[in-house]
Image 1 (cartoon, rainbow, N blue to C red):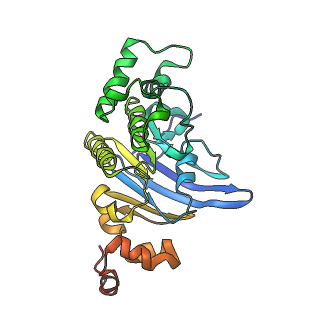
Image 2: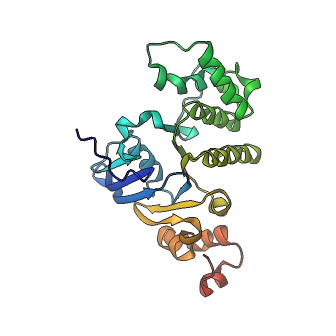
Image 3: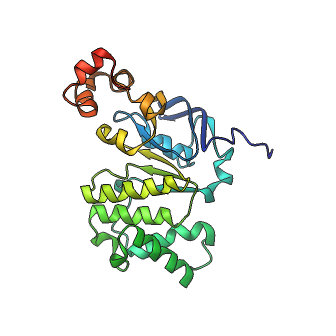
Length: 266
């Protein structure tokens, strides 16, 4: 194995990535670069491969081809630098465990599975719960929490990892407005600390206010770069196709058609 770094100036470098399910490509020939210190939105229509992209980067889905580096090295050597918040719908919330235990699990990467967490680890987990305003629910069974509360607990679990790059799969989906504001505030604070955040996101209306980097995906990458340059009606039209009338109203408001005609979407 070589110690030579590959694109070390990038937080995430994805090259020629292809993922197939039953012979049908879910992602095809993906080249995506994300610089460090940005909060990047991954957007695209249903079935575009957004969650598959995150999972393939993290080694949870085996690609057919391509390679991925995190800060210039393969993901397998960089696990301690990576935090992950999966889709809430993919978690078994009936598993009998408390909010504090769930957050403490985020420390197992440092501890190893054979070493039991002690007082220091539990204090670290409690501090993470405080950051997401869930310290009063530390001993509550996760099955007894609301959807928004569950999402905050999983965010706290990622926070205790003290990662350099975080991958979050629709962290704002199905949560109340208060939880969404809390999640976004925490993510913005992490970005201010120099962390990189890559977020699968579904609400085009909030992309401009939440994110500074953007990847538009529909099996293939449609566009990527700073939101101010990539968030255009033309790029959205290429990604969403026949859904574009509804998408433009959601993304640009009632004047979308006029703005699209005059090219004033930058």
